[in-house]
Image (tube, rainbow, N blue to C red):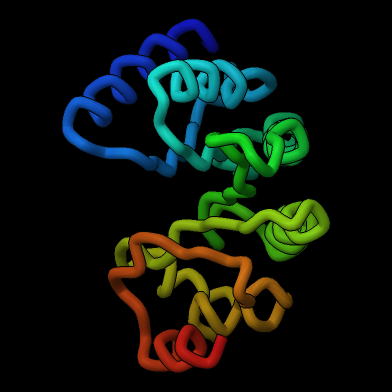
Length: 173
């Protein structure tokens, strides 16, 4: 629930600040707290004085209701953050194997319309790339390019198992 998230966010923020960290990026995955998680975390991060970009990890793996609420919560949080605020919002979806093309394109479009950036985990292991080859006969970044989300507003993390074409596409964008 959001009170547990707030407690954890406060603890992590204090530890980060004591360690010299000034800025964090956090992706929350808490389907039972999707509607208020980001605000609970943001309050603690602001109170400690860290700069942050926060996102709820949107995914279709928890069902259609949670998937839609996650997109709405991310967009509402992005919209609630003032440009001068030390805390801002990001649209994050999990991966191409837990989100379909329409869902990813919708998420990215919501971020783009709000002048925010998007984030996704990408090829952390071999599974995502293999899934893309099996389902779409392309690499993960080729898939992102095909659906129109591979642009300068998309930030990818955990890019461990990329194919040469993925590196070429990243360099080109």
